[in-house]
Length: 291
Ligand code: PLP
Image 1 (cartoon, rainbow, N blue to C red):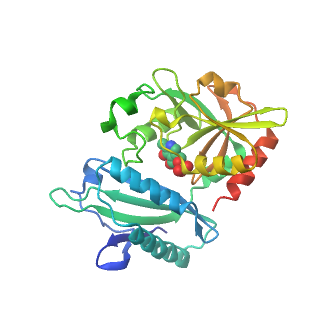
Image 2: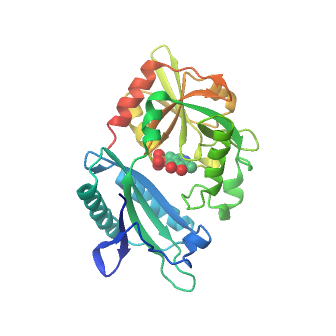
Image 3: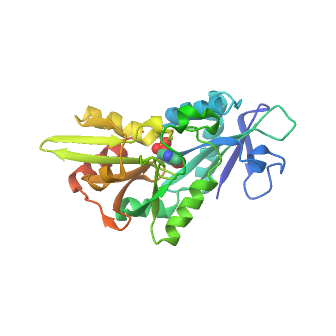
């Protein structure tokens, strides 16, 4: 079951709707142009995890895209209604809370915004344990493009994920589970739906590194929360730039995201990646503690 709640000024707690029947105009620019933004958060143990970070990033994506979206209180109210609807119908361990805001129906001056809650995909949960095989794929632009071309909306979480999904399908055809994008000038970027983390251990020193945001990647809320916990636990932190070889030489490589959490990378382009069990256990404990 999917719980659906539209943000609607006439309904202070949001307007509950039926996700199984038609709800959206075919003229909505979210549909006709992929012109909109979204967030995916994890709902577990009665809590929408990192909700403040998701709402903050939604606000940044809206401002980058010149999109007017409802106030934070309206989102919080609609989310509360949606998770209550979901819990009443389908109690389950983990669910995805998706926030969507589009530019709305062409010719109108207001957008369309809604919240959806549905059961978390089983595959992502399994891969936290099994790990994934990954291939590097060329993202088709260089690592400086964000600064040069702000109209590409780099770093915003827009609805235009067709390329990301195509990359994942390509990986499946090649027999791999997932993708790490590399810029045309050879810098590691991100996964189609995840942030890349690598770790090194040197004696007692543990170091966690993620690609620099200057490459135009999405600022990951999971990476942010892990870095905060790792800093408190005494790890050293670093922000790229990273090359593919840096990943091959690491003591561990992970794909992290709000719904899948921490997924270890077993191999890249068919070459095994080291998996340091202790580093993995420590990072898993940090991810489990995120609220
Ligand atoms: N990068 C991309 C392109 C994503 O789509 C996502 C999440 O879906 C992430 C990174 C990870 O972001 P977060 O940890 O906030 O879920």
